[in-house]
Length: 227
Image (cartoon, rainbow, N blue to C red; front, top):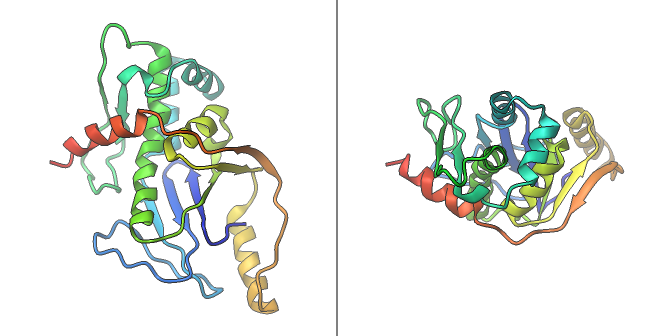
């Protein structure tokens, strides 16, 4: 279960980045939603509208399933040959651009391949969440390890590219009822006076990777949409 210093990145239809903090988070920009834990701690959270649905859309476009989308992505180099997908398919919440649309940038005759498009889809999804991680870090929330959960987290390409985009170690727990488990653990901590430690099966663990070009490319393009 998440402890202080852990950041949970959840890849469902939408995406969330949240952490456990001993103190409340003050964010005048409104990017971080502040929640209180029943056990006396705080749960700062950043939400994006576009996560696994990005992969659904791009898999359909390429005529492949999610496994093959991941295989295509891993066949491309980090940075997808300069192809950048800004995945605002449903507008976006972080940043606050409700009327925005998705867009692909940097295409050329040389880099317009299925592999680069697939990798740009995964990189774009994760780079959007990296902005949430950065917001937590700017608010002095400890972020030493990432726990990757949600439907898209089972994809091996997502796991590997997440370690590159976030630049930190990644742990992927086995699928489970995380919300119910967390609520039960908080209830137990109130009853017992301290949080119990429950072993969770790990699906994958990846060491931190050196950050490739994907995040810098994405940030450069995404910044132009804010102007």
